[in-house]
Image (cartoon, rainbow, N blue to C red; front, side, top):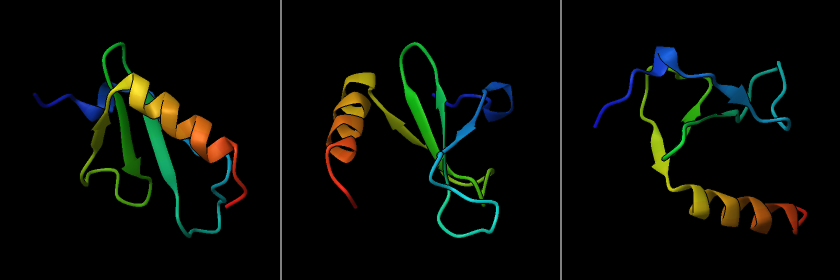
Length: 65
C-alpha cells in the first residue's frame, strides 16, 4: 500500500542540523511510522510498526551513540 507522502507531516530528528549530514525525518500515522532521509524526500520510505518504533526509541535513548 502506497501512502501519499505529501499529505503527511514530516518531523526532522532533533539531532539533525541545517548543515547537511545524516538527517532522518519521521511521519506518524495511526498504523505505521514512516521514516525517510530528509535529503531525499522522494526516495524510499521505511514503514515501521509503532511498537517496533517505540522499542527502537527506548533502545537509542538509553545509549550514547
